[in-house]
Every structure is written in C-alpha cells, then in structure tokens.
Image (cartoon, rainbow, N blue to C red; front, side):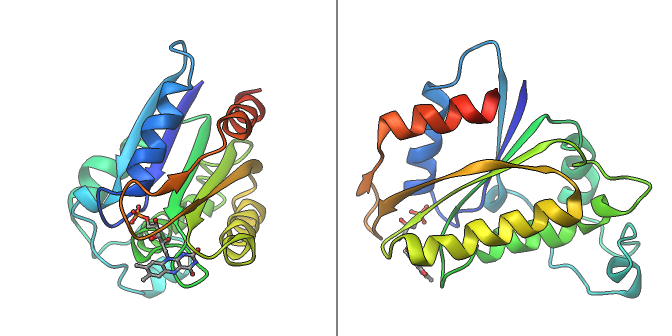
Length: 178
Ligand SMILES: Cc1cc2nc3c(=O)[nH]c(=O)nc-3n(C[C@H](O)[C@H](O)[C@H](O)COP(=O)(O)O)c2cc1C
C-alpha cells in the first residue's frame, strides 16, 4: 500500500512525535510518505471563480502547485494528522484541502474509492476532536472516498506530553491497511 501522511501541525511537536510512532508500527512492505505542510511554500487559495467550480486555479503558482500537488494523487491511503485547534483542523490543513478542492471535479476524482483517515489530538477531549472527525467524514462524501477510521489521543501544549494507547494504534493501523 502507498500511504500519504499529511502533517497539518504548525510546529515540530506532538503531531510529529505521533507520526514517528505510527511509522514504527507500519510494516516495511508498505511505502509511507510524510508531507509536512509547514515546510512547503503553499499560498492561500485566492477564492476565484475557477477554484469555486473545482477547476485548477490559474492564478496561484508556488512550490505546492508546481512540485507537490502533481506527486500526491496516486496514494491508496491518505491520513490527515492534525492537532485539534478550536474544535477544528489547523489553518494549514484547511489551506491544503482548499488547494486540492479541484480533485473532486468529475474529470479528476483522485480520491475516489481510496481511503481517507484522520488522526487528531489535543488537550480538550473527544467532544472537541469529534468535530475534526466529522469534517473528514463529510469530505469523504464529496470526494467519494472511504472513511478509513480515526485515531485520537490526549496531548498538551508541552511537546512530548502525549498519551498514545499502543494497542488502539495497532488496531487503527490494522483496520486502515486491511
Ligand atoms: C490555537 C490553539 C487552539 C487549540 N484548540 C484546541 C481544541 O479546540 N481542542 C483540543 O483538544 N486542543 C486544542 N489545542 C491544543 C493542541 O491541540 C495541543 O497543544 C497539541 O498537542 C498541539 O499539537 P502540536 O504539538 O503538533 O502543535 C489548541 C492549541 C492551540 C495552539
């Protein structure tokens, strides 16, 4: 399986620690790519009419459009990993998703039939994280992809202060890859 991890954290913090743990639980015969959104030149979507119609934006040219987006269309499994911010995904994660909105155009549908899963965490708890999970479920509807499951864990603003249930993580990975 080809797996793309989309890291929406704005810093090298708890999300990165989780991803390291996730990676160590993935069998070597799967390929895993980690896309750290904060390291990319990824401009804000301009909100033009073409973007609104899920067309390829003619106005924005940056590292994301030139070098990254064309290389991330052919994965079997996509995993959004984002801290929960204000009961939602991070700004970086949202910008990323708004930049690939053209994928849902009927001529492209790059996510159709594939799996999209989510990992989210934070200091609040399930009630807060469920908003993120529900957003991903909603994306799955219009992208016509399968919801691949969710994994949540408690973390705080202190880097390294996280509580990952390893048994639950292994089950999440097992279900994701099956
Ligand atoms: C702006 C902001 C908003 C936050 N909102 C929430 C929230 O709504 N729910 C929650 O569980 N945690 C919230 N948190 C806590 C973060 O999710 C938590 O600190 C997390 O470990 C940060 O991940 P990182 O180290 O990868 O940046 C928020 C943190 C920040 C900075």
